[in-house]
Image (cartoon, rainbow, N blue to C red; front, side, top):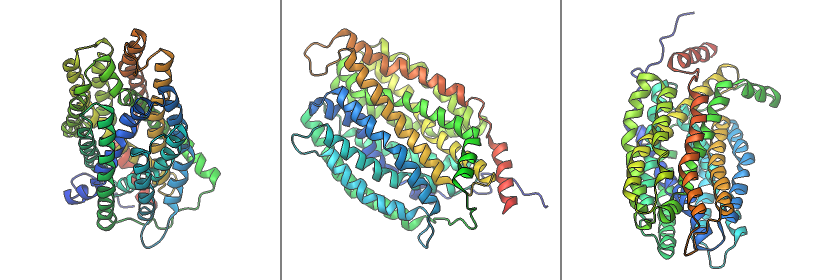
Length: 446
């Protein structure tokens, strides 16, 4: 057999126009993900008076439904055949449900309760899954190159951060009435921008068909999944790091308003965090080329942990010190967003080489499920613990124990989860040379 030339970034460098088109939906998708994780919990718990413990439990239960829907949609997307491709039909079907549920959740009628929150959240998560799982899987299939995959995820997550920044700008005003207005304006913007962005992608990006995919039995497919140890360790690390990021994200508004007593600065602080996330992307891409993706990600998590650890030490009047924390941890955000999904595409290759038949949708559905589960666990753990500690954001005088618990969950607990993630991924075996060997096995079997 004639030896194949290893794939290189130079040999298959993707045009920037394609990267930009593929990244475009990240802007409106992120525009509603920020309030869902950061503002919706506080909006329903505090502004609508449903309570932190009840809201946390409902959001955790709603996210638990993704354990069923995510892998089902991922598998069905992998098996879809037709002239429109594998990914396009699911994105087109999920978009209307996503838009409807976004409006219902962001602009609730008067007198809603926990049941309303639960139903609208479940609908939003279902529509979101129908869009995001095929969308991210599609991105992983555009190129087999180790470093080009990082460029795809970096462009996409850069667009995600831009959408997040735009959404954060609407929440610079702290009062309940203004928060409700910001949610309504954001919902209107999403209803306009998301369809446009998705149409551009559906028309402008090729959706590859998989020829001669093997027919796997459930038992064989499950066995291949279980035997993919690099995927299992990567997924566990992603889950732990997601909880680490989800704790300060879901508690951000409460922390700034009640621990720092600086509610007027929450918009500025969020803006600084996400702008620095964009600024850090080129740095982490360069380091991933120098060290490998997993080592660059570990360094970023160590960097972020060093600054998260200061959050519990801050108190009233320390908003400007916390701005420094936001800047530093924001720089690490780019690595969290761009590198792990690119590593996920590489471990899908390992499954394909062993006979899995390019099950990108299944793998990215499990990835998405872990993403949502980590954020749900962050809310589901943090809010009940705040309630147990006596935290009540509506009280005139907050209990010291309550604000201390809020600070520890926002910083100290996040560091512990990141340390666990670093321990899992530090020796990740699928680096560039390993991925090129795997790709050679796949091409040799075709």
